[in-house]
Image 1: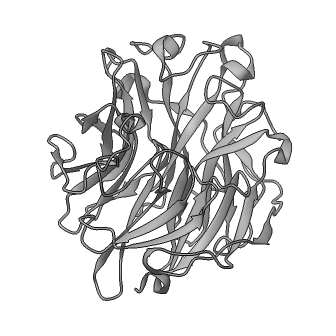
Image 2: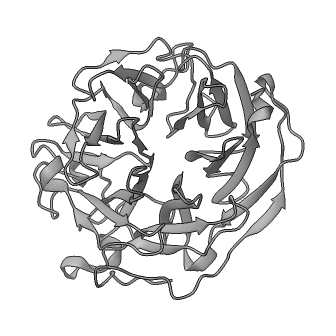
Length: 400
């Protein structure tokens, strides 16, 4: 496992090693309400300790124009803890629909930048986005420089300003060849972060390309008072420049975004208020915008429709062959614990969530959804069985 900082403008794969293990696990029948366990196969992407890495966390997944599945995640070399620590953004490809995966390799590694050790130059929380017009792949993540023993969401773990010695940094890497090679990291902090804010970062998971070609990344931060917020960052010129929206909500963080059938955008957010709220109003914060985040309204499914234990969730949309639009949402379907990893379906732009498929009763935390093909949904998630596993669900299991 390389722990060196990337050099040069592109870095090619010399050899491709396939790492996969298919294990018989659990399957869940698609019926109204949460389904029951049976036999479903799954693919172990990474186990704790694989490839000299203590823990793999924070998955994101997309499918390229050629049909390749691309996975990103944290490679946490020394412990499970968040930043600050020795963490790179790792990457794997699958060219057979998720049955086998290439061995992990770092695509964002800040090495010993500034003369500080690797464990003071960690990168974390990747978001992956495909520009469907050009095929370019963009991975954004957060880089922390210095500040050992701190956390970017707490106190002075990240501070106002743009200086890497004070503030965590908003970074990009790009690929134009289906993920075979990647650019060196680009630092966008000074162009995106309000200098009064304590933090501005990508939200882990995936971004989207809208029907009109605009690229959208769910983002998050801490404002001038240190209060968390969720919002969007978008580009109308294929990622050459980016615009940061107004916050959708306060005291929210990791979000997922989809384009609804009327062209508006839905932002589905982790809400810190759910740490205390275990009542019927526990649930994801759901906001909608029709102007790329200049103005926001609260969706009718807000707080109550989608329970959460305060954890990241994934949300994607898909157009069915009969032209209906379907939303899929995944998260640990529980108010107090990260367990009951569940995928839910909505046929009315998220107003109701009628069908649920339970994947992991004993665990499940961060997840990322992808359409493997027109009839198959894929999910990459943190499981009770391994750090990261990949499973597929046929749409017919949802009655589609």
